[in-house]
Length: 349
Image (tube, rainbow, N blue to C red; front, side, top):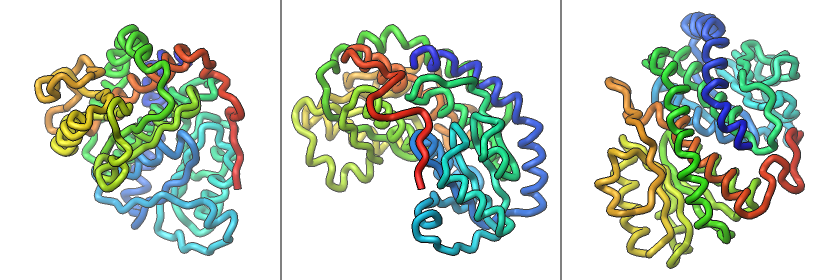
């Protein structure tokens, strides 16, 4: 898992370079045939990547986006009118039976279909009209890392194809920013020792980093068997905060931008409750955190003219969380590459 986390800058660079021509073809198609709705279908880590798309696409393009419930198709046989939709399936292996069925049904009705997968010979790559291949290379650890960030990058490309004002030059900086985040590995490995006996926790993110809260929580669950609840800060204040007591572990993603004011308010509330709070943020935000324990990314991720300000933060921000999960598993004596009871490819209906 650690080795694959370290491979992410190269995986991102390969993915971007290999898909530029394909995304320009997709852009030309979408300019001619504008969909009215985007529907996303995925499971597991890929579902967390889709959750990122659920925020990125409407924020940057104005398109309405929905996360599909695959069992509507596979178990209930519901007949949805998917004409005029852009349907996107996300699967590392490309062999998720229910996700592929969603794509099949959508394409049969004339929807534009995209498959985001790491396997060029997979069923998904054959079903989708526009297969986008994640060039992460073979991922051997059951706990996916480099495929997740490459899937996020692919959603930036799809947003660009839908007309988002995203700069390809800015996207080319993501491998560099990811490389800088990886330099935190020794600091994070030492910090993880503090959490050796942690058995439960909550992870909070909002907006474009909401998906990262789900992904970080998933990594804690599947590599260290921690009961990790995952929330937006808004939802957390509507009830779940009642479970917080002294020393309760709380992990927060705190980028600059529209979500920053509400995040600061929540950190202050957790300070009052004497929670064990760890914040993933940037050094420029330290002065407002009042001594709260942080993992601070060493670079400023806001890009001049980018709206919203945190639009490029999700990929670099998940890297410290991945490193923390891998290091914590090692502290606890677990093998994150082979978690108990789960396998790399899971097929569901």
